[in-house]
Amino acid sequence: MVTRNELIEKYLKFFKSKKHKEIPNSSLIPENDPTALFISAGMHPLVPYLLGQPHPQGKRLVNIQKCIRTTDIEEVGDEYHHTFFEMVGNWSLNDYWKKQAIEYSIEFLTKVLKISKNKISITCFKGNKDAKKDTESANIWDSLGIKKIKFLGKKDNWWGPTGKTGPCGPDTEMFVNNVEIWNDVFMEYNKDSKGNYIPAKQKNIDTGMGVERTLAILNDFEDNYLTEIWKPLINQIEKLSKKTYGKDKEITKFMRIIADHIKASVFILAENILPSNTEQGYVLRRLIRRATRYGNKLKIKNFTKQIAEPVFSIYSDYTELKNKNKILQELEKEEEKFLRTLEKGLNRFSKLTKNKKNLSGKDSFLLYQSFGFPIEMIEEECKKNKIKFSKKEFEKEVSRHQIISRTATEGRFKSGLADDSEKTTRLHTATHLLITALRKVLKNKNIIQRGSNITAERLRLDFSFPRKITQEELKKIEDLVNNQIKKSCNIIKKEMSPQEAKKQGALGIFDKKYKDKVYVYCIEDFSKEICAGPHVKNTCELGKFKILKEQSSSEGVRRIKAVLT
Image (cartoon, rainbow, N blue to C red; front, top):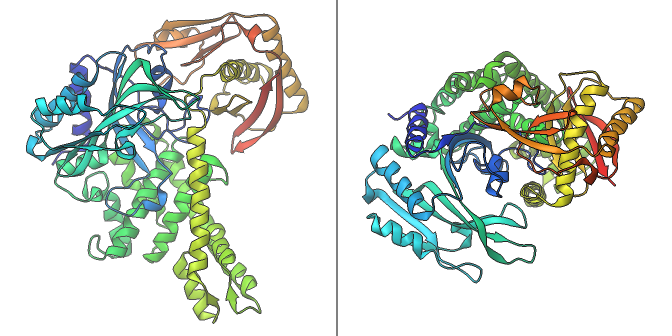
């Protein structure tokens, strides 16, 4: 039996032997990311370096990255979809290219993981009007003894860009017994604002292998949930529900959803995100409530804490899970809150159907979305009260909502992850000034950035602080930032060790995240912060800073929106 720890250790050891430097497993909450709610791929934290900034660890990188993907929550319940997952990946930043990347892949699969070449098949990009057929990759695979090679279109064998413009290129996917195990992306093009695909000045290799799926393949499971990283959660659900996993198709689906959503919730809570009605908090609330809803179907209540318990031992290498008691308390609190909401939903059902013979699609969707009523519960209540209910109307509303939700999520991810325009760069630099001004004016050295969203139009900064900031304080913060802009301060990038950065008072969370070298951006004697950029060269380039709004983001977190004019 191959374990998670063994797989990860083998991967990291192999690529370190090929002169790759291990980089840290980043927070699930993107740092200085203009658009995304969560880190959703291993390459996500590396965007500045894929765009050309030199990485302090060099041109060859390897890591394991925890991810949350929210675009297909509704798909969870089959053998392989997950909301939380881990990816191992290796990168070349304008160093080795296709031949070496593919050679590393086949060597790791066959020599380290001991997978027979006969079980491996490959897909490559078949080409289109924008980019040529990737015969180069196919020929390399063929020369290495892999004969099962298929050419597929852009939908299957092309990656990116993440936004409307940026790095992108063909990929080659590896399958073991027809199940995808690995993907090598060749970022050899840049898509410009006119839609043209231009050969990139910096060519990158970006690879990704899902730990969950790979473990299942290596242990001859067709179901990811039978591996050691899921089975303890499934066992807990079996014990509480007195039902057996794998016997009944529907019950098995419910168990997978509960296990998946509870695990993802634990990791989101570990990032100090609390359930709410906005952004990351909304995703968390949705996951806990959905798990609770499916728990009801299995006739179990007050269970989330017990299902979550094994997560802490399975992932004992994650220091962020050390706050176990708080995580379990928040799970329990949200579960209880939702059960009360269900009671309110029954009252709302009575009002919606009073003196009526029908329940409309919109009203039934309200019960589903706002009060967590499963479709079966809506049907049962309607039958009990002799109310006509159109399942088709309800499904139309669900479908419409999913399209809106998916578009919004994808739009958020695509709207500017790779945006390093002049306006965004100016606002990014202003964010450094703002966080330091907050600490100085509010006389609180514990203020740290908890997320940001920077577009070409405005910046939005989330930061830890327990109360509303007064208008007088906001004016002082604004004035302090503008004073630094007027001083025409130079911005200097310095490379140093994390220990030296800490010694010099640079802002940053000093844990295992940082390795041998970091970049510290210094705005003269005002601000020092570890960052990946991009920045202007002098604060005089910024213009005038103006705070538009200050509000609560979540418990213990405030939010400021500001512009440069």
